[in-house]
Amino acid sequence: MTARAVVTGIGVVAPNGFGTAEYWTATCRGESGIGPVTRFDARRYPAGLAGEVSGFRPQDHIPSRLIPQTDRMTQLALVGAEHALADAAATPADLPEFGMGVVTASTCGGFEFGQRELQNLWSKGGQYVSAYQSFAWFYAVNTGQISIRHGMRGPSGVLVADQAGGLDAIAQARRLVRGGGDLIVSGGVDAPVCSWAWAAQLAGGRLSTGREPERAYLPFDAGAAGHVPGEGGALLIIEDAEAARRRGVPRVYGEIRGHGATFDPKPGSGRGPALRKAIEIALDDADLAPADIDVVFADAAAVPELDRAEAAAITGVFGPRRVPVTAPKTMTGRLGSGTAPLDVAAAFLSMRSGLIPPTTNVSLAPEYDIDLVTTEPRPASVGTALVLARGQGGFNSAVVLGSIDWN
Image (cartoon, rainbow, N blue to C red):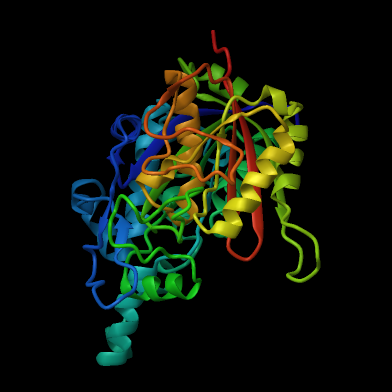
């Protein structure tokens, strides 16, 4: 278990950028993809804003035969995987099929597809329900469709841990690479912007009901009142460093160096959240000290008690040193399982560009003793990054990333 797991390709499908370059340019400019919901009539619902991938036409990107078989999240995931493989200059047909695998995360499965078929069942009868419903709604469908499309027959799987699942999937991909795998496609893409998914998310009690895009999602701000949901995410190509060298990869984004995962204690137990412990486990796994971390990509729930807990975990680990903290997801919304993989992509892009992206629209409240990067990108030499994610119900995950000299 000593192989180094490096990221050789990134594929982004985000509300403020379709493709990695477009996403990073928009993020560094502070351009948001959050706006009024267009994918269904949300006027009757308390929440009416989302981060949507605008202008996406699946027929422009994937074979027509796949369109009636797949939910929007899978269509976005297939495109993200294509982009990531192209970015890594990886041609699956030229690689050992059992040396490649897929590990994705999912928060809700194919909600929109499932809603449509349930409506057919209720209004027309069972004979009008698509046979593809048997798998199009399923949490593991993105893993399955990517692996089938690219002939990837090695160890694969899916992680379900709400927002934290995206980091857990990347950590599992790292384990598979360290255990002998050559190339793993990993990350997460969700698309929960339909009325059924909306009702489910509203029931969780964490959606912002604000109607102004610039004031609806405000983590660590005195006006924090929940998050804006969205669709999209990121997929990464994670490879064994030596296998990548053998196939002549010209450059890598960096290395997955450490991971920690914990679960919060039972409510009323008197014990606090376990996010800090996840951070400490990840640092120990990476064989790094807090002083070695150059930036933290925060979970940024925008729920006051959760923001306080995250800020306390960060200050508890880093002490008086004020490590820069950022949450560029204020420009996309929280994308389910795609949220944290998109932060991982942003962290690697930060290393390449020497810029820490901003947390837009937020005025840091005095109660949070963190160095939050706001308003505009901050120039910085970024060699290591800590990415945090939490899932509703008590999931905590932390991943440590590092740059790598590939010359």
